[in-house]
Length: 280
Image (cartoon, rainbow, N blue to C red; front, side):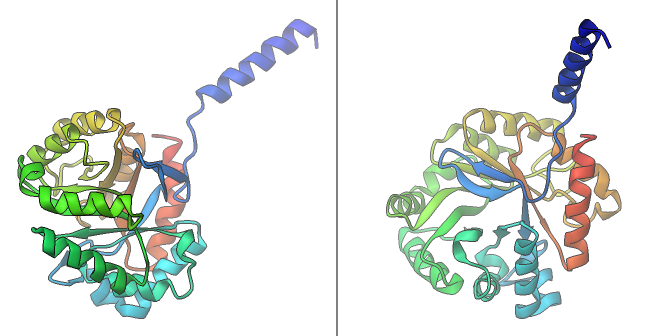
């Protein structure tokens, strides 16, 4: 082979490698938001339908079963657990932490506190229920109104103080309206936003073409963005490939959470993600 041909072939190989889409794994490490909290690309959700202190995961799997699923996820390198007071899953995470080292997993939870006193009590209770001294990601649960930064300021101040003391690593909101999402884009306190996103607009704050531009604004502001309702509260399970490909194609998502009810579901998601990321 002539040297010129060899050089051309080498350059072509380099450009082909650059052009090839990156293969993503469920276990990829992601640094979330301005505090750069390490999480994995996939979070294990514990409340696909969670309300009143229970969820489909807790009802189907029980304390030991859900804890073992969380442990199995960590064994696979998926070390991001998504919980909430509303789901009643703190004890399940605590049980899983009997076998999973605390520093190997990122814990996200959510509060419905509406006053300073309620938030201070939640911080103490949450850590006691979880069996941990600190919470990686703490979110105001289910924000719907545009003025949440004003209404929730006493709660936000307590959480910000907790971050300064090392009790919380980063904080933000889970959004349930376009108005709340827009406010999160503008307000500096929201370091992380949990937003509903899927290609069909199922159980979302608005249609994808309205939500995605807001997520891009949030991401451009240096905030972390976590996608939820990726499978539309389970209503899009017949379109798993389409939904995962859509989530993986978005430049405004750092990671996403999906609730599983079995190890088979978890393994299936983990196997699909690298295959679909190459086509996203």
